[in-house]
Structures are given as C-alpha cells and as structure tokens.
Image (cartoon, rainbow, N blue to C red):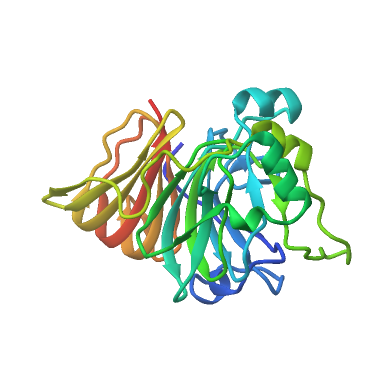
Amino acid sequence: MKPKMLQPILKDYLWGGTRLKEEYGFVTDKSIAAEAWMLSSHRDGRNLEEDVPILIKLIDARDKLSVQVHPDNDYALRVEGEPGKTEMWYIVDHEPGAQLIYGFKRKLSREEFECRIRDNTLDEVMNYVPVHKGDVFFIPAGTLHAIGAGILIAEIQQNSNTTYRVSDYGRLGADGKPRPLHVEKALDVTKTEPPTVPYGQIGNTINYPFGTVRQLANCEYFTVDHITLHGLYQPQTENFVHLLVLDGEITVGDIKAAKGGSIYIPAGFSVSIAGHAQLLCSTQKS
C-alpha cells in the first residue's frame, strides 16, 4: 500500500458551522459541516480500509458543544463494546474571547457532582479556559470537557465514538426534543478534580534544517507533532504516519496537498515530505 490522500467524512451536528466548507473546500450537501473525520477506520465513518487505533478530526464549533466525558478502555470495552477515548485538542483558530471547559476548578465528591448536574449549577465549578491559536489540551479519559463557541480545532483521539453528555444547555435536537443525557454513566467515569496535565502553549520546539518540530502529545495511544516545514522532511517511525495540512502546501511522492489535505503513509513506507507548510504529524505509540 502506498501513501494515500484521504477524503474527509463530514458530520452535520447542530452546533457546527460552515468554515470547513468555505475555507477548506470540503464538500457536503448539508448546510452544516461540524466535523470532518480526516483519518478514520471507525464504523461510524470510515475513509481508510486498514484499521488504525486513532481517529483524527477537524471540528468547527460555531456554537458550544455539550458538556461531556469519555470512558476509559476498561469501562468502554465492558459497557460499549469499543475502546475508551483519550484525546488531544490543537487550537487551529478561534473568535475573540472564545473559551472552553477543561475539568473542574476544585475537587468535587461524586455526590456534589450529581447534585450540581441535577440542579443545573455545574457551571459554578467547571474550569473555563480562554483559548489562543496553537494551544494544546490533552484530555485523558474521564476528564470533563466542552469545546466553546467560535473555536476551530484539530482533534487526535483513540478510535472511539463513545460520548456521555452531562449537560446540553437544554438544546433541542433535530427531532425537536432535548438530546439525551447520560448522567449515570458520566457519574461512573468522571474524574471530579482539576486538570493535572499542563495545557496551553506547551510542547518543546526543536529546530532542524527543514524547519521546526513541536511535540504536542506523547501518550500510550498516539504521538502528535506540529511541524513548520521549509524544505524536505523524512518521518522516522516504523508505524503509519498521518499528515494534516493546516496551511501551505506539501508534496509526498506524487501526492500534492494544500490546506485541509489529509495524507496516510503506511507503516514501513519511507517517504520524503517537501514543501512550505504547517502540519500536524500523528502516529500510534510504538
């Protein structure tokens, strides 16, 4: 198998916008393009026949997403029949004043967490964080979170689509009814404490002849680097590599890709990446 340009799978969730269509040229007959699944072998949307353990998205949040949490592997495999979901966000762009929810301001008991869900006072204890371009948020399974309105992110995650909604602000779904919450499951899996992982403008940046590499995430499920490319770059890994072009243009063999380009490079395939671009380079953990 040779390197392959992947076509995004578009999702039209109610909170989404139109930037993925207007700025990236992604095609859909829906008025909303909330998510573009750039690398996926998941049953809910597959653009790669080979199974890979990570799923990569571009997400355009015109409105805020639900307050939610994802289970870990043990719980998800037992209850949902698929892996858990640890993920990472890279802030591609945002509107002025945009913010997101990342964990809690302080530690809560399970009882207080449940009480605040029931009486709609959760907002008082959630950790709101203003965002900036290039910010990174690593979100281990069990972390309460929500993308705020006016944020465009790249998300790298485990190959899972299990989400437990804790609050959806009383919004109505396409059927005119409130979208379902998953309170009991959320109570089972949520870590009711402040974040313990650094976030924001994190990640060491190393200079190379071809540009710079900033390490964004290095966990048991995936590694992610931000690459500023001005020349020729050769990834050094025995695993597959996924390239997401954030800006500029690159050439990989006979493949040319511009902003929004999604290239899958199979394991063991040696390539050179040439061009001038901003890239996210992701792979599974060795």
